[in-house]
Length: 288
Ligand code: NAD
Image (cartoon, rainbow, N blue to C red; front, side, top):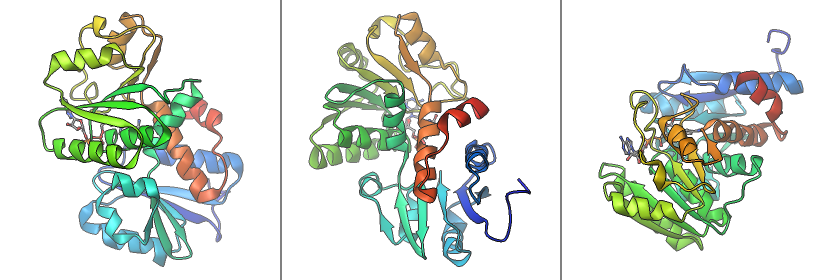
C-alpha cells in the first residue's frame, strides 16, 4: 500500500453508518493495486447528520467519488448535481462520480444483480421473476430487471413501512418499462406459492436468513420450488442461508447467495471511477 500512495493518489470514499464491516475497501484497494492504478479507497462512518458536509468534501478535496450506503442512499440525492436515469427511477444512489466538481449519482446494485446472473450463464429476460423485499436491495433489483427486459415481476412485501415503497416500485415499473409488475402481500401464502410455481427466478431481498434471522426462510416447503428455476438470496453472510438449503433440498440446481451481486455492483462503480474493468476473477479468488 505505501508503495502506491504518493502526492497524486486520488481518494474514493464510502459513506455510510455503520460501515466498518464492509468488504468494499478490501475489494477496491486490491483491484487498484493489481492494475497499478493510483487510487485509494477509504470507509468513512457518516450518517444523515454529516452527509452534506461529507459530500461537499468530495468537491473540496477533489476526490474521484464515493460509494454511498445505508442510511444515506436516498438522502444523498439533494447534495448531487446530476443523477443517472436508473438512479432517478430508483430514487437512490450508491455511487458518486466527481467530474471536475460536478457530482453525478448512479446506482449499481441492480445492474450488479443482473450481471451476476449473466456471469453464471443465466438469462431471465422475457421471463417471470418473483421477488420479496422492496428496500435498498429489492428496489434496484426490481427496476433493473424490468428495464433490462424481464417480462413479469410478482413482488411480495409484508405489511410494514416499506409497503409504500413496494407500491412505488410497481407503479414506476408499469409506467416506465414494458414489464408487468404486481404487488402482493407476503402474508398471502397461497398466492406466494402459486406465483412461485411458474417463475424462472425467485429472489429474496429481505435480509431474512441473515443475523438475527439466520434460522428463518420465507419459503419453508421445498415443494414450492421447481428444479429448473433459479433461487437467489441477496444475503452473503452466511454464505448459505436457510432458503438456499431448502432450495437445494428441492433439487434446484441454480442457487446463489449475494456475493456475485456484491462483486458486480463494485465492479461497475470501479469502471465509473477509473474507466477500467475490475479484475473480477482475481478479486473473487482473493476475498470471497
Ligand atoms: P431494507 O431494510 O432497505 O429493506 C428490507 C426489506 O425486507 C423490506 O421490503 C422489508 O419489508 C423486508 N423485510 C425485512 N424483514 C422482513 C421479515 N422478517 N419478513 C419479511 N420481510 C421482511 O434492507 P436492504 O438494504 O434492502 O437489505 C436487504 C438484504 O439485502 C440484506 O440482507 C442486505 O445484506 C442484502 N443486500 C445485499 C447486497 C448485495 O450486493 N448482495 C446489496 C444490498 C443489500
